[in-house]
Length: 251
Image 1 (tube, one colour):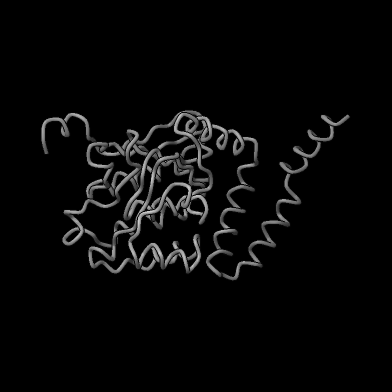
Image 2: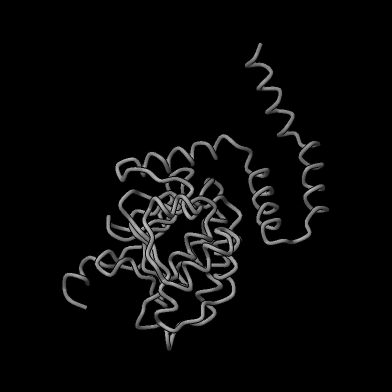
């Protein structure tokens, strides 16, 4: 690593500000790659945010304007790509708070799966994505294949995995990889809009419905749990208080 990289590139960091918890990847000169040694820190960050009483959303983003992330460090794939990286992404997918991937730049490799683990993906114009596993001769791990098919459908998953073709931000939006596409100057404001909207919702209902929606998407039978959660919410003091407040505003 040269002196410039050493001075600029650092491990990821967790920032807690009000209702927003942000995990920021900080290796801009190396396309915000995720090093094997980062995995423990990232798992600890997830645990810290989950334990936080004030956080209402987790934002995952990168540093700079070129790349959100290029995924797992290429030089470490053969000898250090083990189940820990897959387990990290599974933990992001299962995270109880709403998760927002703020794609500040292009996204490649395993970082595309990191983005798919999030509930919302906001991208900026002029960026692109591609999944190069087939070019490397790598058969992707099961969880990542499932997320691609689940989020994008079988046809698009095949297109991206089997051809390793790059696609534009507009195409990312069209096939459902992106939730929204904005100008770079509008990214921060759009993320803030999502967090504000989440703050206005009842946290327990948001967590419960996220859990059930993910289970439905995976094809799991969760009707009994979903019915129980629904009936519990009908009896909750929070529902009564919010409906009373709404009625008062309408008078």
